[in-house]
Length: 370
Image (cartoon, rainbow, N blue to C red; front, side, top):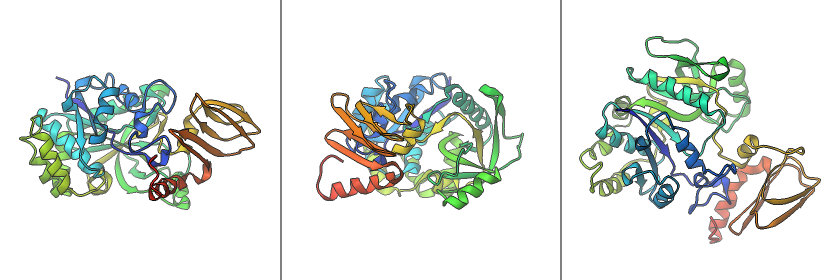
């Protein structure tokens, strides 16, 4: 029996990717990169060879169950876990892990968001295998840390102790001859200011927090019991309901009782048995238009273009518009131009943080395209 399972978190709305990402159709269900596969499909594809298709679980909003099953038709109803309301990542992960534990108490679980970009697929798989091997026999919680390339203030940072506890870790060589090493985590820091991020980069002891986790299911259940006992108690009560026709009623009740808290705040920052795999596999969390610009192919003027577009004296822009509409752009430098479903947004790339404000203001005006 293959004891490896994958939990894909696919419930977010992705407001910062408006107007493409909407409440009714979030970014994880879009073919953002123009590859012919949506972000959700790419994420599931990425675990081919890591676990069998029947061991992939999607946690999403009940609003998106049909979208998930349309895009991943191989999934059964039991593999699509529907959250009645958003409660952040700790309850999401608890629900899936307690359910999987009922089926397989020896499960090793990989948790991954549905909207990340991985450019080096084989290096990613080798990194995941390294983490899986380390968690088979040790009660440790493993997260993936990305070697930082710049002092980015939009990511969380993990400080690690640059020594290896050989009793609890493993190493593996990945393409290019680099080595995945698992190190003990010292601290987590959420989105530091620029000066601090620069210090982190210079120290060589910090990596970006990728938000991808690996652990054996007993280790995470013990962690929930210790650090989030209320969450543990709520989802443990579902042990008799999982995989039965009583599961939906139980989950609806559980989510009305549980607090909204992230797995980082609730567990990872408190636990003493957290390790990080130092990783380099071409990662982006694709959280913003700027991050899409950075990972996309650019033309000679450093423009990223997707659509029926004519450009004049325009550079350093990302322009994504419907292919059935001719768009002519003249004289822009460093802009986002995005049109989708009757919404056109033009915004300076450096001011992309205002996108959330645009969405909020549109909601206040009663505009339906959000």
